[in-house]
Length: 72
Image (tube, rainbow, N blue to C red; front, side, top):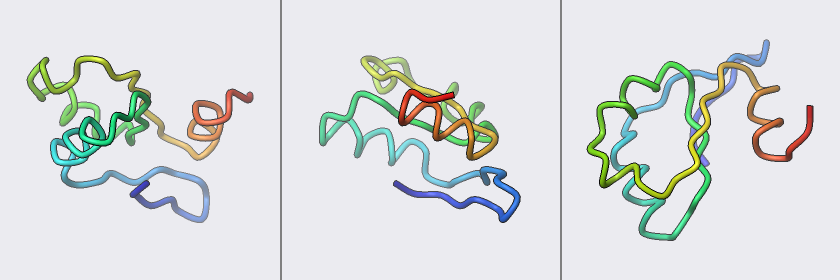
């Protein structure tokens, strides 16, 4: 896990999206949540890096909770 939330629950952008995807693949993660502000960074990655992941984008903490725990 990496990233930051504001006190009001907004999800802030992260750096190193490509490196995080490569690391997730290395440890066989299948489920990724990125900040909505990083959607463009993820979309620009080559298809072979994105293959096999369920990827969700969050703009608020409530989105993260819903995706991670299946609630909401």
